[in-house]
Length: 185
Image (cartoon, rainbow, N blue to C red; front, side, top):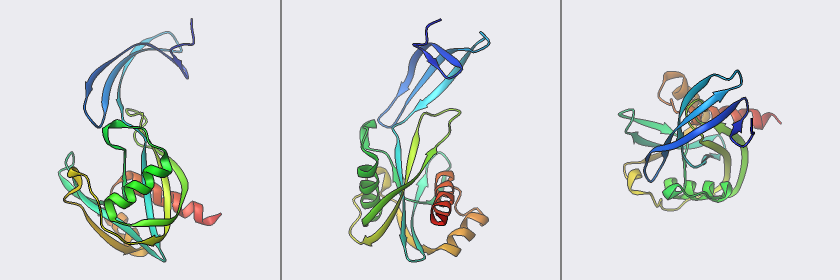
């Protein structure tokens, strides 16, 4: 058997796109497992994203926006992908997302981690950046972000927001855990 379509312990037998828009594609892959049995995977392909933790002293800068699939407004760290499913260098994307969503620019932007969004159904991965030495400016939001609000929160308040369910964005919570571990080094 050829390894051309082999990924790990599975072989991709066939793949076809079932849906696409400006943000993602959905494909269905016929696969063969290591034991020879057949199966299928539905996969959401999205470009990699950048998530930025803006930190000033003991304060974190968050954005709040309406998340249509949930039907709720949610607080989270600034994060996103390049328009049109374009691939953009992670550091460049992080600086752009920070500026676009908050108006902030970072004098120092350091990559501190990597996150897999939903590895059971999506190929998307995210790079986590810590932004410090911040200067203010005007946000330049995309059309979908026009309802976005921003705010500074001290770390103890942010942790209480996680504990109370006010912050539920998995990427933001995981990124904060990466920040805590990064600070220990």
